[in-house]
Image (cartoon, rainbow, N blue to C red; front, side, top):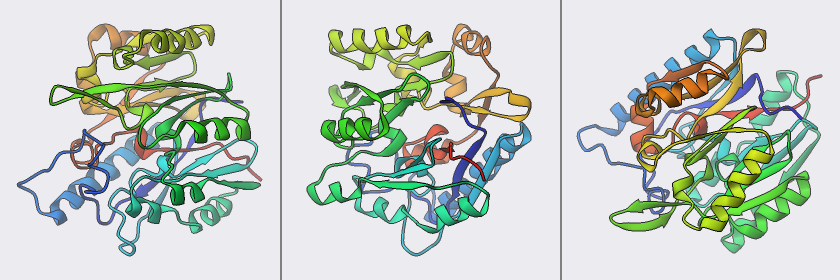
Length: 311
């Protein structure tokens, strides 16, 4: 299976704001006091449009879907949490922690992909787990090494261990399960999504190993990455706070790979880290300041990779 795709699905926001329902365990969200909701959304749309333009300028196939005002979905800009697409035509739908995020699941998005020539064979639906308050938030929770069939997952209120194992059985991945922490007001709290502290690319991985407090778990994760032949590029917790873990490798024109991140993430990297990444592929970064502050998510969260086969 290929690790990288040329096609991404993105949802253009219409009522983006800080989601009060996700702020309870996403400690990266901030209140921007001096901005009206309308101006927050306008800024988010500007950042979104500029980001799409940059991706398209290097030949990434970006499928943009406009969000709708009704129902109210302030986090719709992060579609990778509720859906994932797989090379065999499978689509997975995931149970979401925040009730208003469950409204982001829209069947017409699959119709739209089929109109674009993609084949949807099966829908594997995990959403009934919401009734039992069990959650697994897509490729926010699951970092999929598709080539080596490994699923890395940092457990949190949004990533349930049993559901991770069920996903791995259904999709034939080997689970690597651990806990990752961040310091919030002097306390160690679970990081809500794995893709905040870790990024998997074809020949390298970016990881904040310091977030994995349990030494044995940390060693297991590092060993799996090394055994998969990935060069490991370490980042700090401070860089995680600047969304330096929230990156995604995509394919542009002429099979050229790019590592996608926000400008804030890029600016937090050292020269040595940038050089280590650029040995493998160029970096493409875009300013996402408003989206990061209010949404508590960054470039990777905005990109749902489409691996579906084409007609």
